[in-house]
Length: 461
Image (cartoon, rainbow, N blue to C red; front, side, top):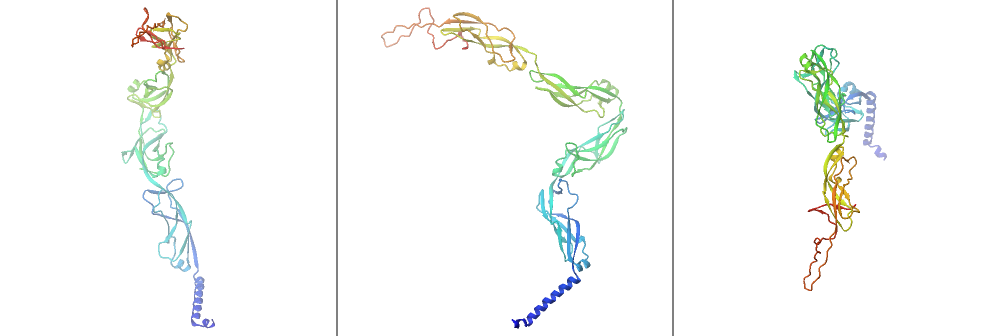
């Protein structure tokens, strides 16, 4: 072992270790490792698929890139001689293959030139939200506020872009935001103006409740709005008349028609205004109605006139429908039935169909069936002979007989008797013969009622 330690190879190895240790000590003493921090460094987005857009937690497009803090570790000589700057660092996230939704991706840092350094990033991962970017065409509306002075009127607004009429525009943005857009509006204020309003206006996307929708862009972003304002030749206050067409369901009637507003103001020249007596509404169809309902109907200004600016363009029409309570009378045929026939009797009825007059509400009479119009004559306890009787009827609630029921004749007679004939000794059997002066054989399985050749219905109470 001592011989080994005295060898030249071991002495060389020990010298090399001591030299490296001394070099490291001197290097860190003369050129120590330093750190430099850069805060709020924007992060580049790479690999974003076409048609996708980066959004925030509210679904709004991100106007700024996400940021991270970067710490650089390098020796003092490199930091001093190579002049390390923030522009030498490029943090980025790779979104290749990522679709709509929320993704957690690592942050990478590369140098833009060859430098000997180490970097740390805070945070190491970023949450990136992606949404599909879509376009949608929506209607353009003009919202006017204020009122022109008395003696002037404002005509319908005209919207143009690059001197071309504009009625619809395109909105672009994240799908979740564009889906909320119901229209795009331009706001104009014509209060107290006596000349045309003509000005470029910013177009604003709004939802179905008229609230602005953020995070989408409008193409075009502005439009020229012209509101013609002209002197009024004349004014006339006239009533609003609802136009009702059709009829309610059978058994119902219109009890009242209400309209709001009751009066509107027309503008125009003296001739057409003098001829205008009212403003009708568009037709309100009540065909088949069975209950009260309300409709919104446009107002139709008489020819040569128009509704004054600020007047409603539609009226609210309420039509009150109620059942007809007045009783009606109808005469209908009714079948008559005999019940209560005693044993041993036959019955014939004349006539077996009578005309009866019933009264009730229209819908009750309409629902009346033939089964509910069956007359009954009860002959219980009556003997042979002809009897004049009045049929009785059991009618539904609300339906009554409006006139006495016609009387019918019921003839009761005894069943015929059958006399057996003497039998002979021959192989044939003699048939029974009816006794002189009596009808032919009649089955006795049950009572039969006839009148002429027509059978009549029978029954028991």
